Amino acid sequence: MKTRLFSTIILFILVLSPILSQQKTFEGVESTYQNQDFYEVRTISHKFKSKRPKNVILMIGDGMGTAQIFAGATANKGQLHLNNFKEVGYSRTQSGNRYVTDSGAGGTAIATGHKANNSAIGVDTLGNPVPSLIKISQENGLATGIVVTTSLLDATPSDFVAHVPSRNMTKEIAEAYVQSEIDLFIGGGIERFTKHDNGRNLVDELKQKGYQVHDNLDSIKTVKQGKLAGFLKEGRVKDRGNQLEQTTEVALNILDNHKKGFFLMVEASEIDGGGHNRDMQYTVEEMLDFDKTIGKVLEFAEKDGRTLVIVTADHETGGLTLTGGNMQTGEVTGRFTTGGHTGVMVPIFAYGPGAELFAGIDENTAFFEKIMKTLRLKKTTRP
Image 1 (spheres, rainbow, N blue to C red):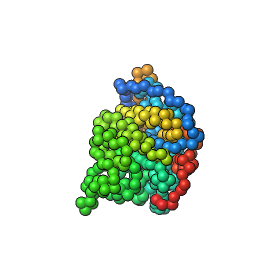
Image 2 (tube, rainbow, N blue to C red):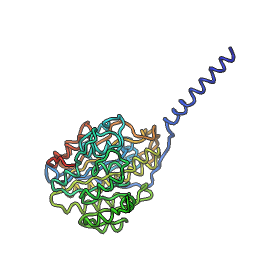
Image 3 (tube, one colour):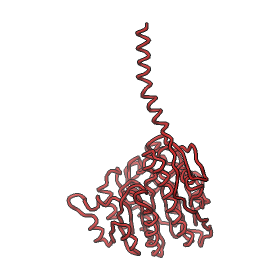
Image 4 (cartoon, rainbow, N blue to C red):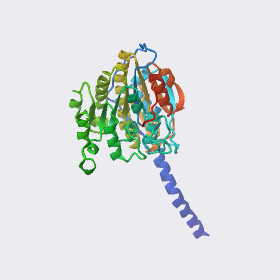
């Protein structure tokens, strides 16, 4: 009897130990971030020059949910440039084959209006290539651009230029940039362009197509017009500085030369990295860097009066929960419940002519049709 009881106890321990261990991991470790770099937020006017936009700037905070936003607000004593947005909604992020999306499927839905399976880039659930907002904008005579803080070959920016079944097909994605005719793109990943297959150098091909190719921020900032391929280092904001603000400003100055207008996608890629690393400081600093860039974009849109600005996310990362904070000191405490993505809705913020269309709750595929409608773009069947 004692032997049987002892064996039962041992069995329970063996069964419950991994479960309890997983539960402890799932709950995460609480951490506190104390901000030291506060910045002022100016109130932006809501007086526009037209009812329809000439330009659209789509800003994607990869992995950015409401908790990430409010963590940033707390860290900056309650003030964010996002506070200027009056039209607010939510986006449902589920992919074609999973409740929890990845950036490939999430970005494809936003860029093309089609649900995609996880890992897919610019194709529908059957694997058919579908045209993106970049391609359609080009077909309608608009200038186009992409600015990101991570590699240009990562899922979200790739969704706007490539059409491949897997986000891991970086060779084909790099080639898609060369063939895309996009006016400018700035981000990381130069190695795939310079050291391509069979000795092929895609940077040389870009130059032959008329692109000004630069691999440092100072050189990129000298470009005022024409086509630009800018390659910069990746990493956290503490390493790259306010690179996203500056490169976005370069993009705006170049694209604003086009009389018919432009479509620009800006991605704050590393909010996602903070969630994957379950790192509070990483997450908040990336969120604040994104918000500062949003401030620069709002300044442009306010002055222009004909620009629609949309801020959203492809999904939330980390399952961040805020457990404490202090609006007076900029201290914020929280824990991550996962090192992956979650299936929760993500926020939408819109400013400018046509912003009212983006209020409410909708599918992530709805961005496509709404942008098409506001810009009065004619559809193309060519991917």
